[in-house]
Image (cartoon, rainbow, N blue to C red; front, side, top):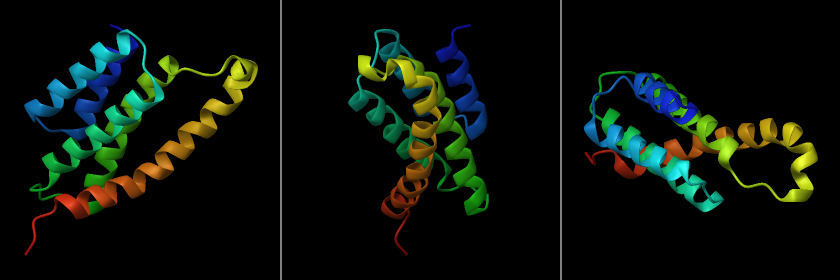
Length: 126
């Protein structure tokens, strides 16, 4: 099983949803990642998964923090599978091992706000 396939399975298990759209989206991410990804494509895949995941959990009886944790876990799994395929400038190659964890922490910190904004945009108006 490839790293990407494992991450897709992990993302689906983390969300604990049987939404066919998410499974199809994660398969699409796997196909794209096999040929290599640009930073724009990676960002698009991550934000798309956030939107699908938040949308699939809107009607769930879970508490808000549990929903957010599931979305964060799924997107983190996808990020971890995509990160090795991200392009780095050659001059950063010697310190990639040092910068990669910092970049991951930054992406996941920003993800918290992206999830909140996506929820605010998608939640039903009452």
